[in-house]
Length: 460
Image 1: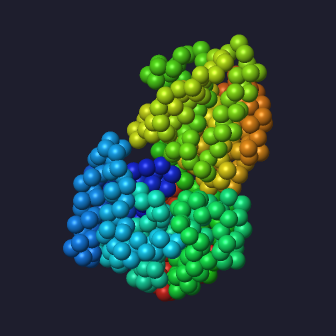
Image 2 (image 1 turned 45 degrees about the horizontal axis):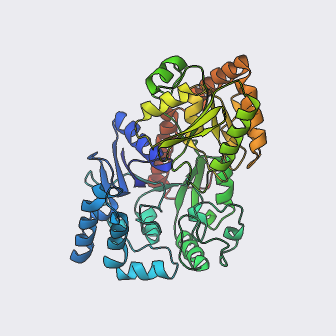
Image 3 (image 1 turned 60 degrees about the vertical axis):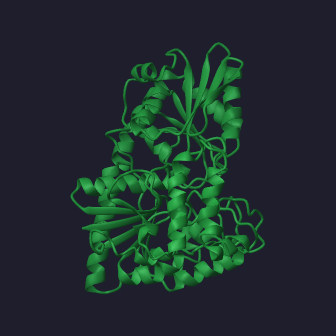
């Protein structure tokens, strides 16, 4: 089977990890799998840029090439990020700059229409993941207007990892209900992906018109997100829908000796260790690091004779001291085996969010046999079995989170039993191989129905 996936990056967190792991698993099973991305960060030959098809003019190509050459200096030389952004927006494409200036989501990426000109032949199926984002602050690499054409050419699966496809600009609506009826008068233009002016009604209606001409196979990792889809302007585009939970690589994320993991990571054996893992853990607006920090302070106040250590993986470096404990910040780590060591080294995994679809980190913690205390928002309750693999607490409730963490830290038997149950159920429910099998069976079903009957009825 020739499978073409589309995503923002080839390496990263969340949606990027899902697409990358599926790419690896498809290839292991002998399929011809490729990944088209907005920005390529690795060197894999089966990953290519959406914008490398050559349909841009010479000026745009020159600007993009110069921007790519500057990437190694980003974060090392002041002003490089701003220069790359300028090259990709108003220097390369004045029209794109104008759209961004007036608050319109930029769809000006003409090479999207060349996606099917694959180096491995025309794909049997296209599987899109996040169609927004990128290192440009406004985000963008894919022309959403190509969806009707794409879905007529080849069966097209779209997996939602957030709610951007349903809104006038934001990846998570954070309680706003305007996405149901048409957006406009946006209460917060700064929610990622940001827009400079309120053209959210225009953006919403443009998406609605695009979907009205499309026939898409929609998947989501959680039932919560599928319910959002079914109530949105994307619903008329659904040819068939399926909830497919994310999977984790159980050869990497699996139980192991806590003492060995701590020794390798140089974590004191006697400390009580909490772990929070997230992309941009401190600054991510959709996470809730503030609640975790407050909860850890409360844990330290209640367990005065213990040394409390919170390890935050995903942003920055350094540490903060408090009373009988420490918050240790660890930069984003690409090596999944190192991340797995952190899960094994922790006594409790904590996860607080203001909005979250189906975070991989909770699944990874479960697979490593570490119980989780998490906020009960959006799709998270579908990942934590209350009292069995962890605990759920109200969003923003640091006291409730601290109480559950203390309960686990002070009850070795309960913590061990939850860890065993978490690992056992993760291997049954969230195996990457199972996720890949579900998708491949679905691909085959879609292709057969498309080739046979020509149309596919709605299912869930």
